[in-house]
Length: 316
Length: 111
Image 1 (tube, rainbow over the protein chains, first blue to last red):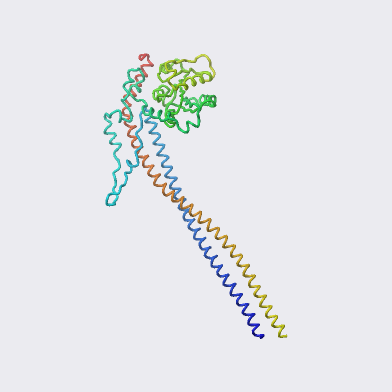
Image 2: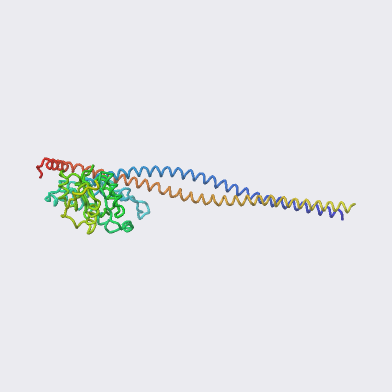
């Protein structure tokens, strides 16, 4: 009897010890497995992070290269627009790279890229038909009898802008957001630009450019969505008269100048694109009145009714 | 005396069993807490891994696109350059005409 009790007690002790040891072992195995998984995931993350960093560096370098290329492209676009010509269209991906089709047999067939587009353009540009001549050089002889500048008489006119005017006037979401009239001020005098921007900014959406070239660039970028342009005459790169020659149809122009004795002023007075000529210094109320009269029926009114405002100096 | 010894053996066995069980639950509770932490960490790392895989995939896709775009822009630049050169060569006589015109205006001959 005594031995039985002792054996029973020992059996209980052994059973409890065995149970706890087994259960603990199971838990430890789970913990070790999870620790291993955790480490494995950590090393995968480290490897992917390194790949990500490398790809980011490569992408950044590619983006920088693209940025440089875009800048170079913009320079050429501006240079071409200086001639009043329409730049050639961006080549399509198919034209640059070609594309692959599956033949009937399932093998890829490469369709050749249009590698010779520039050469072809050069070859056909001896006397290209007007409708195919992107530059429009020599296309506008009609203007030559009008006594306008030789550049215009030679047909170096912004025919490409006309389409942009149409596209711009169709109205975009951006234009709907700001219902104010958009005014582009072109003057190399930054103080005057700032003054006019500050004075007219509450009434109109003002944009400004330091010279005619930059103004043309902005017109192109903005899709010609300006309701009126105010331009000085004496500016670097492209002066006021040359700018007026290249100004897209449908945008009225107000000319500002301080030099009554210069021939450009006389030219501005008779220029068909100038709806109004203001002599510097001028009153802001005169500027407002000129803009209001120009903005009304958008450039059709006021042509041939050129006025000068010479009496009252306020802004210069 | 014998009964007293037996009682001691039984009591000792019970106490040892209780000690073993208490130690077991303490250790198990620690282990389970660690397992919970590990599972949470693994879940976070899996999410991070998926996110990284998506980012890396998109970066890998973006790279050739950027290169193609760059190549396309370069091809366009070549065309624009050619156009610009043509325009410049054509504008030389026009520029001369402009200069003559400006000179004529200055000297009063063009009036």
